Image 1 (cartoon, chains in turn yellow, red):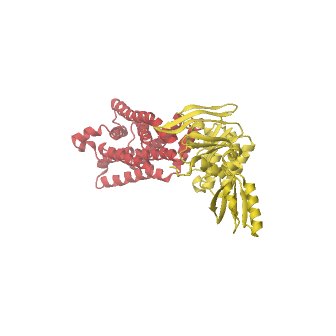
Image 2 (tube, each protein chain N blue to C red; image 1 turned 60 degrees about the vertical axis):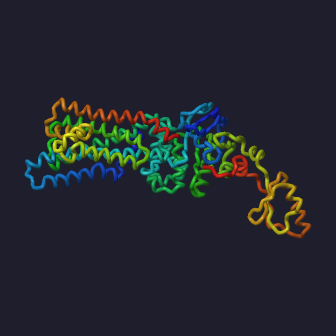
Image 3 (tube, each protein chain N blue to C red; image 1 turned 90 degrees about the vertical axis):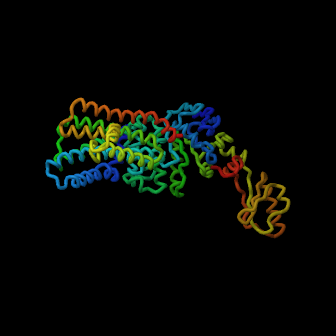
Length: 293
Length: 248
């Protein structure tokens, strides 16, 4: 269990984190969500022991204290080869020569760069660099992997590849802390999430529970003369994609009304869909949608 | 720490720009200036000129390693490598040492090559070999110590380049690397004694000619060592700020 206990961190007069506490069970994939400047990277750096000057405690019980940190930046030496980078980080993590040789081959395979092992990183695409960035944190097979926006600016194929890597890590029982701006990523790969804003935890828990608590289902309808008047009583209606989005806590009842109304009028809706609540909507409802610095 | 040293050396060995600054350019300058200043002179008249220029340009060009040192640390800082390394079991002080020691190797090899070039091409004397080696070592320590301080203190590579030019070229002029100190006005002669270039040049020149007395040798070595120690202490004192800027 990783316990983040009442962490407070300030940069001068600006508070980056205020009394943040979390508990992350082993083997869990934990999403960290928040707008820019919310304190996500600061919290990750504290857990990764990059920042050591803070108040509070980070405790790791039942874990070997091995951490792999994947920073938001592509923190590689680009003028040398992928293999050189892996060799470098492997040595920093204290791997012996023979173990390192084996692990480099395995990690290159895992990140799909075996063929490019001897090429200089500067010749790699953004996605390849991101994969290598992750690979450098996997060499010592850490119990805890901290990933700060690992999929920023990459193509869908590389993103997919990274998700597969994360799935494999989850299967191995590795604890993962994953910070991202992409809510669909958090929803897809994480079991639990914490919402940070202005350095404070504003919500945390299992994703399904958060969605149940804050998310409101909605239905989307498109077609002429498909909205009965009484449907307005069931929730908010917004115009969207040449149709209407009805945000309601009674979506099935609303659908029933629409279908009945259409039958009565002899019309057919072009589209009638039930939309699940999304983390992104919860994010906006919790943090507001004003632009942040 | 060895991993950092190895990576740093490998990176620099592949950098053609660094090879140009440390070897190609000083060799070109040496050849060019020797041919200009010895044209029309007989061999006996050329000897002292060559004996001034070879150690002079050696001392001048070792200072340019400060650009590479600054660039390396600033780059590590900007691309998140320092922060990432801070998350590994490596001690933060060993990172600093790992970034320093490779440049000592590079500068020492640079001095050896430049002096050997002088020996092989112009047959400059290397009379007091032990003194020359010790002076080369303290010169290496001094320039990399000051370079480390510069790399830790400045916030941008451009600032590092600008300050290196001031230190290297300003020190070269004042330290008598471009023209003999005794041809300069008295007040400049006084100022030149505060530059490491003056002591490095005078010491190497005298050791090469075989006229460096033990007292002067110790004095010169101590002064150069002093400059290096001041640089190192400055770097160590400001290192926590560098880390703070880097890791937040």
